[in-house]
Image (cartoon, rainbow, N blue to C red; front, side, top):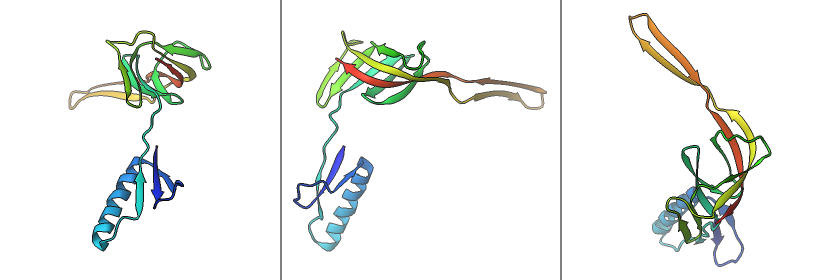
Length: 153
């Protein structure tokens, strides 16, 4: 979360994302150099301190935080079911980071299954020119969409 404050006022003038903040800093600095005047804004950056975790599921690793929705490899659970991801590699909150070797003992991430589905079709084509040879195949990968409900370290 990043906030932009104007002057010395204690009110938040504008809530912006990091890309807008960087472009605004560059533009304001250039304007200040050209006009020889002090900059127009006082920049206050408040970094997110939400708890996050890195979990392993389906042979992949995901960085998750509470409330986030993501697609993972198919889990055998129906929509609406609650699942626990116990292969937690890292848990962090602000500057406090706990790293497992390879997993953290007692740490788990709870999630709710929102949907099961299949991804877009991937076409596989093998073609040899002038040989009257062509092979075609298709593949649709199954996935489970989950929403993170809690992180326990």
